[in-house]
Image (cartoon, rainbow, N blue to C red; front, side):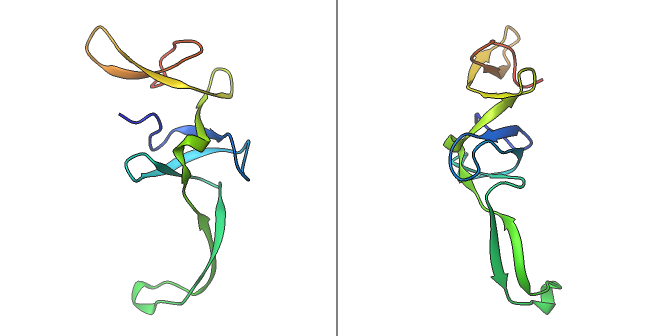
Length: 106
């Protein structure tokens, strides 16, 4: 079970995009790297591909960043917080915020 999953709201804690918030679009390399919306944007020069109906030019898209450089955003506090795991009485394994021990999978 990964600490960061697709659809999570995260905050970047280090690097050129420090402080930016966004949603995880994709988790790559078994949870090692993540794609976050509107974070770590790069410009890529592409040739047109008429078979794929793709225009050429300069395309701006997100590049992946390491998962250690993002923290899960706690909606209650609005800050990035560490995440741990807990097994509930009914046998489910859930993520919990370390600071408040509240369930992160709400």
